[in-house]
Amino acid sequence: MARWQLVVVGALLAVGFVPDQLAAGKREALLFFDGVCNLCDGFVNVVADYDPLGRVKFGAIQRHGELMESYGAGRYAVGGDEAMSTLVLVQDGTVYVRSEAALRTIALLDPPMKYLAAFYVLPRPLRDWGYKLVATYRYKIFGQTETCRPPTPRFQQRFIDYAGPPADAMPWATPDVPSENGVTSRSAPSF
Image 1 (cartoon, helix red, strand yellow):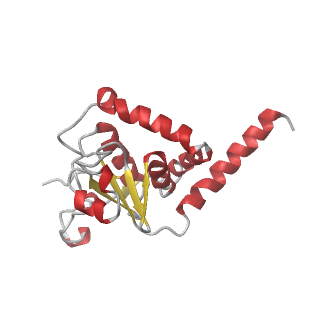
Image 2 (cartoon, helix red, strand yellow):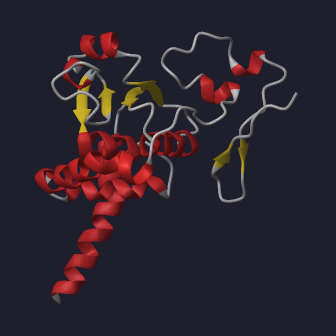
């Protein structure tokens, strides 16, 4: 077999095998993100759109320092040694950060997004170097925001600190609508 053929076969195996292995047996996950970063907010929106089962719950790092500390991730919370430097994923009590947090989150999504988790086969130092490079310049490249996506009741339920009624108990709630390609879209409620 030629070298390029081995690379293609390896890539296909990674795409078919890695995402399912990273997501296997995982229950609900908590994803902590920088709530004012446009890149982070965009990632949360992608996760919400491609995770119709709602396995990933969200929380802004700025609001959940105590909860992060209870999981042993306090150094990534506001005021910690590595404050605001990474996504933090808590899955089955284990804390993941940087590229591993992003790729494990992506592995929980529906196709085609979950196939991006195949990048997990790259060595962690290389993945984390790229992650840190983007994280360092994320505000300059993507900017910051004071407002987030207008939430539907169903989207609000995805947040850790949500304490309202279930979406189906709210007659004005606009349901998630699957499109022809299987991606769920959400629209703001109309009054």
